[in-house]
Image (cartoon, rainbow, N blue to C red; front, side, top):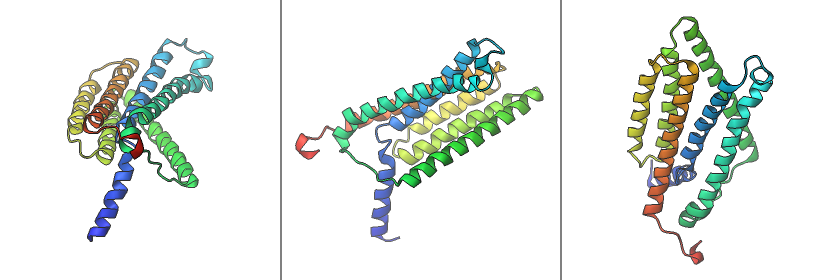
Length: 220
């Protein structure tokens, strides 16, 4: 690979990492975990055999808290970028073809649904055989692997995030063999994973603020 190709690849990778230069991507993921924990908490207080625990009411009661939290997270990340990030990095709009965006969203939805269905079947198998430890450990391992992959792609310069991933992994092992009921397990793991994602994003944002200065108006 010659010098020109190396420079071009570095610029392409820099653009890919731009969206999470301020940690907002990690904050958004963390809020997603918090949204699911809120949905779980709501489900635990709903009367059994009611409209809101069946179909389609159960789907509504699950998605409304999640999308509500994600909506607030999206709004919050936009404020961070407008008030903090763009004043330091400049405003960059990455060109995305509409078909590519639509295909990406559909692919993400299908993949998420497939993973969720697979994990649900795995958990059901474990419960049927009176052993939910292994399915729980595999479920949490997916969360840890997602954090590692996302942070290594978007912020590879921050080696300290490996320690956060190790903390998540240790926690995953500990709670997987805790013997907790499923509602308690969900209400403990989801908020904690969400808190780690958000903390990681906030530290990234703090480092951006410390290492950069807002540009003068003539430079923006």
